[in-house]
Length: 63
Image (cartoon, rainbow, N blue to C red; front, top):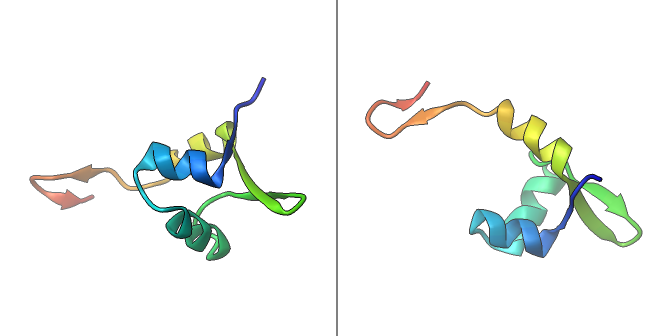
């Protein structure tokens, strides 16, 4: 069964505000889905999204 995250759960998990999660979602930068009046995030969608991000090495910067 796929895990479903709410805006609050994802914000807590990533250590950012709920506002920041909503803003990134509305900008199309996070793969959120509308479920009634709520925005939810499927674990599989998030895994695929995070695989597409660049690797950051603190000593070198973004590759």
